[in-house]
Amino acid sequence: MDIKQIKELMTHLEESKLTKLIFKNKDYELHLEKESANLPPARQRVVHTDSESAFQSEVPLKGERGGSAKVDAPGSYVTSPMVGTYYATPAPDQPQFVKVGDKVDENTVVCIVEAMKVMNEVKAGMSGVVAEILADNSQPVEFGTRLLRII
Image 1 (cartoon, helix red, strand yellow):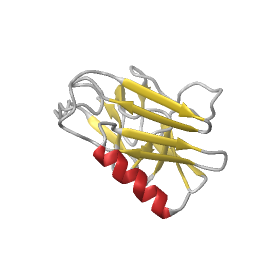
Image 2: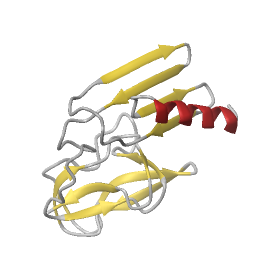
Image 3: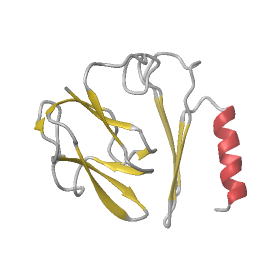
């Protein structure tokens, strides 16, 4: 896939009602996602598979993760230190680093952010209890994306 094809996919995504597009191939995986305030407050999932591609859209309920309610909850946030992919587990067959309700301290590893094939451990950086996990496993994240809320 070349840059022209990627730009075409981006244009089609912007013009559609979809919020997320995942294109998988043998050699790579492309994730495109957009936010829209005009989407209905209902959860829907549309999946279309055609040979090696998958198209998926998910609209969260109002107030859910990524929904239209943008109220800061009490506590502090662990944020992504870089652009990459968030992983809640050290390996696919292993349990999560932390779960809601777990006590953490400054040195507790709470997740991994993969960047350029390097697995970077993210530590809590504070003491408290995990109140909320804000990212989904294997989700692309930007620098500063809120990953967890600790109270």
